[in-house]
Amino acid sequence: MRQNKYSAGKLTVEIVMILLAVAFFFPLYLTFVNGMKTYNEVITSTVALPHAIQFKNFATVWKQLNFAGVFMNSLIITVASVAGILIISSAAAYQLVRTPGRVSQIIFMMILSSLVIPFQTMMVPLVKVAKDLHIINTLYGIIMMYWGFGIPMALFLFHGFIKSIPRELEEARISTAAGRPGYFSGYCCRF
Amino acid sequence: MTRTKLRRIVTYAAFVSPALLFFALIILTPFLRAILYSLQDWNGISSHIRWAGLDNYRKIMSDGPFFKSLWFTVKYVVATTILVNAIGLMLALLLNLGLKTQNVLRTAFFLPYVIGTIIIGFIWQFIITQLFKEIGAGTGWALFAKNWLSIPGYAFWSLVIVAVWHSAGYFMVIYLAALQGVPKDMLEAAEIDGAGRWKQLWHIVLPLIRPAMTINLFLAISNGFKGFDLNFALTKGGPFGSTESLALHIYLDAFTKNLFTYASAKAVLFFVVLSAVTLVQVAVMKRREVEL
Image 1: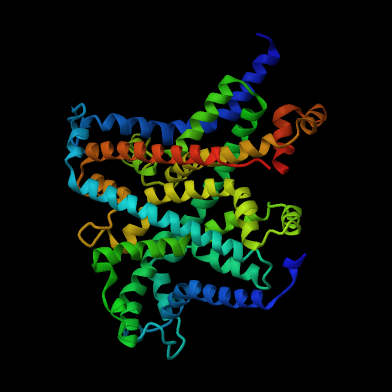
Image 2: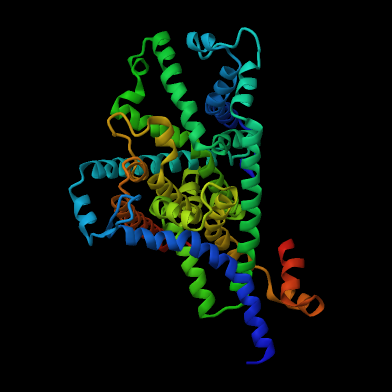
């Protein structure tokens, strides 16, 4: 094919794109470089390289922010919420696909349509609900909220995906494995 | 009821109920309560809740700042949707030509998206107030000599530029995935029939990536309407509330002015506007998609 030849035009495009990428990357570079400067250096010139490379700012921030502790919180929230979303919504999507009928249809459409609700609509009463459930200002509280907000999108993606797995594959497996739940945990998830 | 049927129902419930429970608790209850609050008069603290009927909605009709932020949000959505899709599609087309460095370039353009919007806001606040001043002093260009964040028109475009810089790479990735699904033999057939690069792009590639356009427009519109973090971190809605997005406006009403129920009414209106716009957009675009 002609398109695969490396012509002069392509070289021009390549160079332009590299320059563009450098421009795109510049703000991130700037952040990093200024992180290594002293306050006076930043004020006199933001673009200039630091006179001497020093990591004092990073050390200060590490201590002041209690970075390790805060990062641990983020890590716990991320791991727990992603794991929860995956387990809860894949299980639900599996049953909703494999048990067609009005009930499944209604549940799926109801959860899916909540994707258009902006967060700000639910934000104010959510605080109240969280207070009522005594999960406000707790790690597990925010994890549960992430579960709630993550489920619709994950369910939608899993639903489409499970539909594409041929049924015959599954039936052959169920007869040899330990029924539906056993099939789901042992086999379906591996796709 | 036979034993197998009972077993089936129990299994079904066991699989579906966790999702339903969290959906009901975290999404459905707050949503229904938002509608309920919007019909009441309550400051969020006192135990006395007064039934207000449609008073909140009537009050909104004469609320200048609300319509100001609605107008800002609409302008912002139009500008970011067009720019993010145009630039994303252009990047995707160029990075699909088979350049030698295209994998590195794709990563570079996607990189800003990985960083949280709040941090992006602070980085750019620094760039606009510090670096732009230096550029202005160095080159003498009047454009950079001003403080962009303190002039309403400039503050608007600062937000748009930062938003586009932040998410163009993400839209590029979706377009790239769609471009890779365009069959090569079709393009070759068109080339044999004498179609040039532009004709191929216009008559074959663009119609075939319509589904990606539907998704991208939907994402751009709904993200634009929901924009909060960037306005919060970069301009705080200023100068003079000229860059206050709807989401930020509602947040300020609810949590700094303690107008819980009034903010809820605005939030419900916000939901109606957003769902109407996105549903119309998806319905219109879906009808124009072509099947391969």
